[in-house]
Image (cartoon, rainbow, N blue to C red; front, top):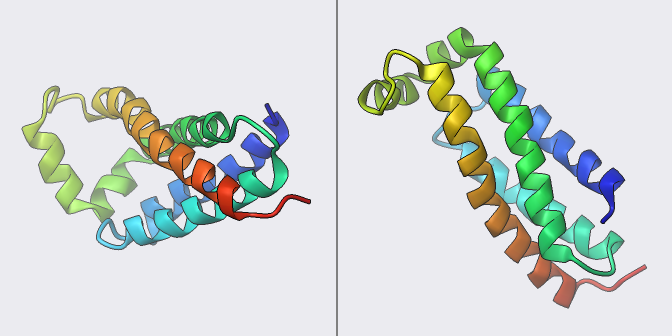
Length: 131
């Protein structure tokens, strides 16, 4: 496993954590993630010789840590800029503890997105020429 690469690619997640709190609305956020996933898959395929899926999964799990942490710390600002998410949280379990709910759902979202990024990395490994 290339831990350095995983950490470096996870910095996209850290940047997105702050960007989604302050700048990026939830309706266009998936477009940013798609671009990040494609770039990460390419870089994994270019810089690794094996375990492409595991690298993609690991990047997304670290992303989940960054994003969940930033969104919990900056919760009031995040919710103020994301009224749809606020309404959705009010209807979910633990409506009086949205930070705890974020703490529980963040890793699950990281796992699901990790499955996607892992698949992207496998596909990219079949297309991209190695160094």
